[in-house]
Length: 131
Image (cartoon, rainbow, N blue to C red; front, side):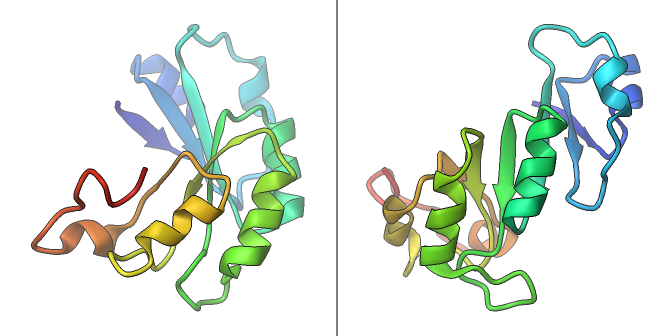
């Protein structure tokens, strides 16, 4: 899948698979575009207000962070679970995911996870590590 960040119109013109709308992008202009049936619009959020905004933007999947990494957007498991249960959007977990806390993702409502440092490790995940 090939997705372009923060430029839905260009993604459509390049006939890409979708577009990513970051949490800071509050625009609704993409709603007036003619989208092909399988064009996927994804986004990101860090709190309920941003999630609701992404629902209005009609995204299909949201990256929600940060579940484990203690940064400015830190949620923790309980707050992450509360936010993910308050939306019908498909949720992808972000932030501080490693082999030691991977099984904890079963406690929250997410369809998967993403992370740079997790995939930079020398050994990848095993099939029984997640679901």
